[in-house]
Length: 117
Length: 149
Image (tube, rainbow over all chains, first blue to last red; front, top):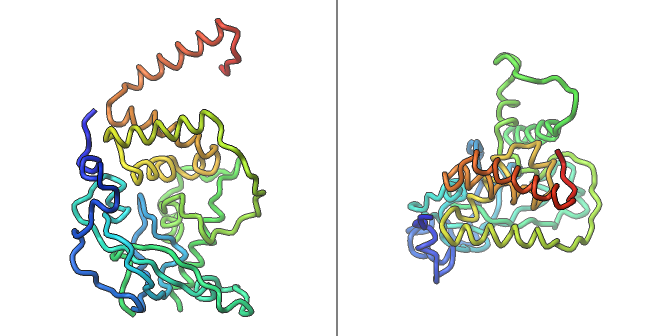
């Protein structure tokens, strides 16, 4: 079996650590408000549909890695920053009880899914 | 928030796409599928968050030996460069299609994906795999094993 580029790169270093420093300057910083882009979702994605067009706050820049849509075919030449994002549950679900309006949901998306608000 | 309304409508449609038997919806003519349904059909089938569904019972199930073995085999294949974890997820959660994604046990999909990956990447020919499965079945029969034909 032929070893893929990906496994050679990650062996002994870890993944996503092996992509550190490859995504360039981050477009967003902690505290920025962003909106999730409703990009096409054919074939593969890890970006949940229920987040699209909703707004969130960046709480952490977590790591650099190829976006899932690339990595799923072992395309690893364009890593992006991944952001941990905080959403209000009442922004995501129309029937979420206002009594729990302080509830939040935190999840990670790569930079291509975000636009500045 | 018209865009959010579209998102919620999408989640509602995909919930309705859950496989149901005896509903003739085969090979529709193009004008029988609107854009919203095209998008719902072609989404990644593991993106189930927000779909309307019935509650399922939580059970604390121990993993079985074959499930551990399946997991380890997948990791070894990654280590040998056949795939990475994201490609494995794509194959076992999305490429299989919605009926198999919802219908087969979790590690059953992992195991099937190993065989499919080995065939796709030409490490094993499908005829070789078929012959091997048949050989093992016959051997099991001869040894009094239970075999599904």
